[in-house]
Image (cartoon, rainbow, N blue to C red; front, side, top):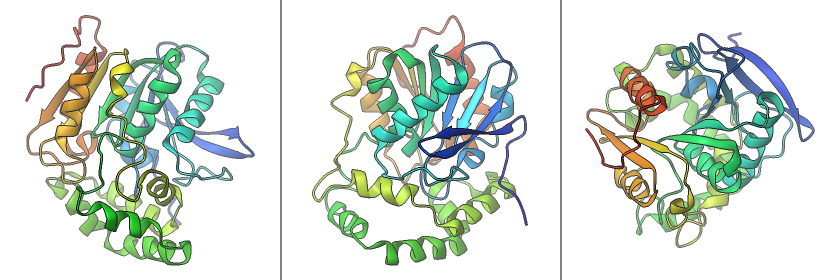
Length: 299
């Protein structure tokens, strides 16, 4: 049986938390400001989201990537789906293994929503933010008219939702086509792990949607609060993203005092997977000592 996907340069650890254990991928040197990587929702985990960039990030800096509750190989921890609760868990795990100093937090999609909560709830833990097509910045799921349908879907019982989620694992390649601009860019190992993650039928993304999708609008739209975040921030977003609107990132970056947004052509929802070289280029520029953190969107 094939084991869980582990990115090059990563070693697997497990951290005890809340009666269970969190799977942690760790790499890089022992000293320096850590980079904390938080994966997205759906058939995702730390090994999937960060497979193509983990090793490069870990060459000069400590890197930590965790599986959120209900995803990957994190086990035995209650899954309530609240992005605030996931932020508290992530901050606690990082403090337990990486000390009390601030880290640069990376989050993609749902993970970006979690990381925004880390910045708002635990500002002393944050040295900077890298947000890839982050969730939590829209008033509606799929637009005002489709939102009530999304809410109704979230109300279905687990007896319906869980088999449907597992069944979706058979159609992973079709789902990938909706997420990315060019599916050929995805490594086969990543697509295979996505299918395995879907078949496991974890509760993480289901509970996240149930916690955040209200009847008429999103319950946790952070658009009005991102201006409180003073840490330097980099938004990365594909222009062809069909899941999260690039305009969400542009608005949020404009509202934050030390943020800039980069829009990438020929790229969908997964910048770090679809365009890893450009992702690493922008991240290195952001982390460099001379980065002025301008807010102007670039192409």
